Length: 293
Image (cartoon, rainbow, N blue to C red; front, side, top):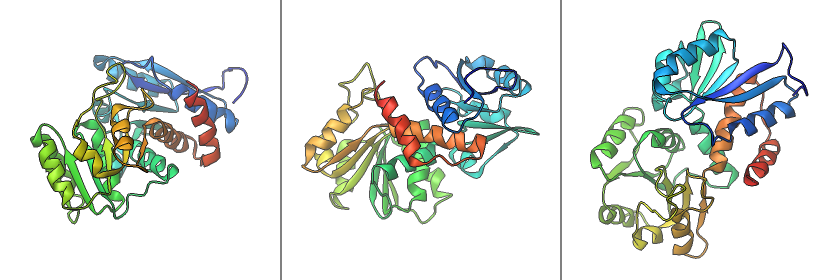
């Protein structure tokens, strides 16, 4: 990354609302520095009714690429010229790349989730996995889980209808997948017991996020006793109530937060924009910096 901004400096950025808490500028500016690219990454707070103007204006200004975060991941699809297959399947776009005919949309949440798990030595293939939540954040994670060839996927949501809708939607893409839904802790535990006590649990909800750090979606010790590994997409606080419950249920249990997923979805976006491959050691150097706050 050039030390000084010039007339040749390229721009990358983030569209979201709000964005003041975002760690994306640190990730992408450090990557630009590593690859010695004359780029700067900025965060833009864009309210929903200004999304079209922001997308069109950024394209007109020749911004090279954009990340898209809450609440725009679905709405931005209206303003893209093309989507890759996984973005269409997930139904959300979080990365825009400038092409000659307009923005091309991608979803890097799924590969970011899978690369984070790989970094932590967690394999999904042939495993039993329970996903907590059936909202927008769950879609990319469910897709990634199914792509990984799990043995059984259990979707838990307090509103059963939403879990069933997600199951039915993804069954259209993965007809051989073994998927089940539950909406109460009692039903959840009953189903899990039929498949043993080595489950991987993934919390895709915001329950337990700062400042409500004592909140937990499922307060039933039996559930956590059936889990061996927990993954929370939340990274603030660094150790959530969900993670504590997983780790405290049995000796040897492991739990991970969402900071690596955040990092690796950003890494994948940077790779798409710049046609590079980011080595794991470079990504982990940035991860260490993210840990410092």
